[in-house]
Figure 1 (cartoon, rainbow, N blue to C red):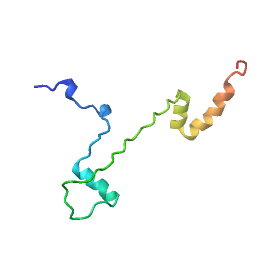
Figure 2 (cartoon, rainbow, N blue to C red):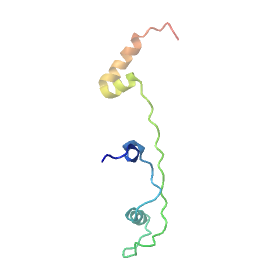
Figure 3 (cartoon, rainbow, N blue to C red):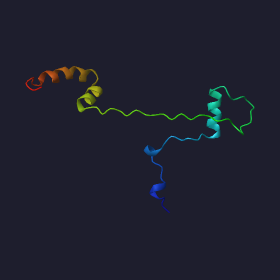
Figure 4 (cartoon, rainbow, N blue to C red):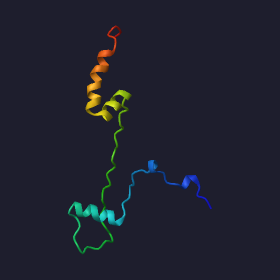
Amino acid sequence: MTMDSSLRIRAGSTSTRSVLTRVERIAKLKEADRWKEGQSPLGLPKVRVYKLAMKKKKVKSKEEAEAAKGGAKGAAAKPAAGAAKPAGKK
């Protein structure tokens, strides 16, 4: 039997979870020095979950993308391309 397309998890559609698992909560408590070894894993204190805001990447023009790929060759070719443009229009 096939799975309905609405139930599939897509890599791009995963969102930030607001609830951590018990193991993740214990790891956060250890980082904050709030966890003592031998402490009961039941009744853990609350742990804040920080949501990360990703900045959008700027779209590069074709010339900038080629210069980035070319390295030194692209940097050397860029001034030559600028000198070849006519200076008549502004």
